[in-house]
Figure (tube, rainbow, N blue to C red):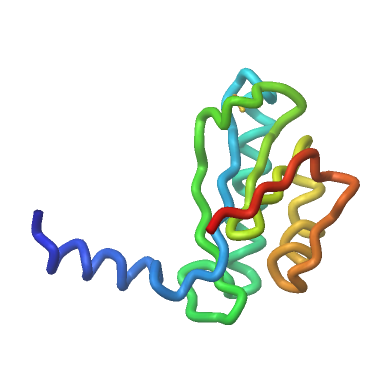
Length: 120
Ligand code: FES
């Protein structure tokens, strides 16, 4: 393992500054391919627009696109840590409100959440 190169990569990604990590499923068992792609683009763009991605902002958020979170229905499924809130039907139109409330304000949106399990 080349720790120096990895450390450099982590630094460029602001990994140690992130306060939250969002996983968004774009797999075709829980949503149409175009729905997943649009939701992912919306998440990327909204975090970037607000300077919350690759940033040392107090609300900095890491994002990861995944192919399955094992729920496989009513997607796109999204989970955010450390809160461990699981969101359903996170289509692109919902992403700006999600970012504003959950990521910026730290306020979950109960009507979109179907399960919660904070880790740690
Ligand atoms: S394909 Fe999205 S949860 Fe399985």
